[in-house]
Image (cartoon, rainbow, N blue to C red):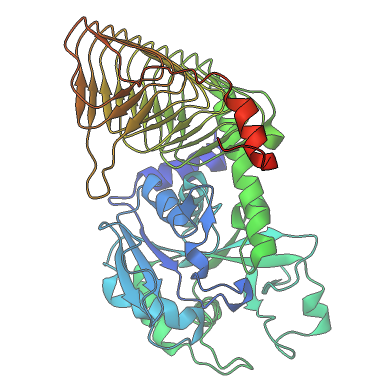
Length: 480
């Protein structure tokens, strides 16, 4: 029995000695974005747009990745060291962009051409496309899609037998006829070429069109004219190939990416209570049986363990959370929260904060660059900055570290088992010994020995009759 086409395609892909070379076109100016930020650096779920096709290419097993940048080199410093960058010196179209990369394309493996402003392309699709190309024996394969509204895309013209014939561009009036504009099959801008065919044919592509640009699809027509086979592979999911030209497109792509990220977490055993109000970036890690409550935002490289409850209304950016933690109505940035910790409501953990196992940070508490020990509690209305708190301590409501003297930051050290009473200010640098206590309303400026009680406040004086004398003075009757 003849194997299924999909199996043949997979075998064809696996038979490649090395992964394909992937060329990503990213030199477009993106003027329709109306932004000082280069189009492909706009954020899509925590990654710049260009990082998505790069990640897909890498996951698909690319042997080499080449990104084509513009003459101003806006991508410098934004791509990792494993990506080669070439410059398209003149904005002369997609053909000119690939031509700029030819010297970086090694012989042997096929060449995949992707667009930097098409971020939803997947590793699975790249593998499928390369496999289909390899199995077909074609010298080039173009990805196509059937769209309800094909406006703005080049149309795919097929011959009488249904085979690929050519692509007609539609960028300017006169590029295509009315009959051609009525075609709904479009060129999705993703290609696979045999490397020798690409290198031999691309230099022959001219700019005889309204835009005066070198169109990469003209390579397909030239190959056909030379009697070479060119294939068209239809994408089953057109959303994979959605391009971004303006901010409306960007919002549409972000929403698709956001929902796919959430669906992946749901299938992995994460309970996301209201997906429509939840934002999770692409690189966020969530453990099984963690519950994400409504209106929660998880950004950057945030990693959350198993069995946690996050939200509602929490925002975490680059935070590391252990297992069985609770983060309620809180804002966390660049911090670490270990197993069994409770945070919030309405707490703010700033960069450099570490909450050790089973500690608690309560209502309206702000922690900055501080280490809170195992089982320690800062329950209410407090600020701890540049502090080290030992295990098992409890700092009462209104605890404040005065960590800045106008010139430098200083640390406060609180030992194990300390009981800090309400409205205590710790003027750093100061050390509170193990098992020490503070009296309510104290301003602690000197070290407190272990087991001692610090009373650092003025003695109360009651001035009898003060209010009566004040009123009389205000009326001008008698002096105070």
